Length: 264
Image 1 (cartoon, rainbow, N blue to C red):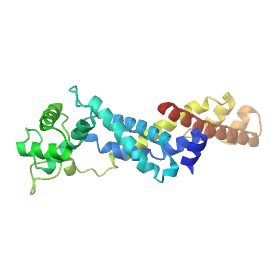
Image 2 (image 1 turned 180 degrees about the vertical axis):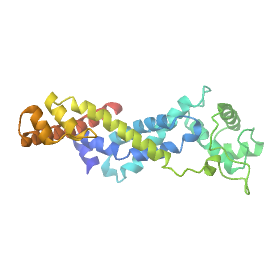
Image 3 (image 1 turned 45 degrees about the vertical axis):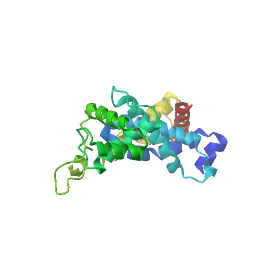
């Protein structure tokens, strides 16, 4: 079990595999916060920090799945980033203020309250009571969020038969889901950067042979490379295999080191 291996032996390769296998979870969670007007890529980056913290602190013997445990770290990291970045107006740092900030929009929707106006006194009282905060904090937070001007597609709609739903619900997209596209691009970029760094450990001949055999659109044949280096085709194949194994091992080590350094 990877989590147990990392916990007991501080194995960087195990940590790297645990994190990379949960990157899509980060993307999925980050997409839930896209209504705050911040770049999804930034939300994902902050979520990755939370994921790495969750992996580092995870205890396999507690009986929780890593995905369940890490979810709270991911959300906390994203929420802290939103609070720091969403508005120049300080949103509040207490647990109650954070809870108010991240639940106010949903509660206004449930109460059928307009997004861009002051709340009715009875709505203020209901929200304050449910969240355990003073009524004045609800009023102040609502006004601050109205000034944020994020143009969110998560704003409740007032048209339609039942007046419910969000603008996002009416947007049709037949292409791949955005979180999938972001996750794929992110994984590709991470792997590319690690590959470049891992190949620095090869000598020039190994690097050239591996590149020409596996990393180009028109790979050279063993025969062509054997003529370049004046060795047999079998020797070229051996060098290619050895170089590939070196790179694989180096990439795992690099990934583990970077992830551990990020949560130290």
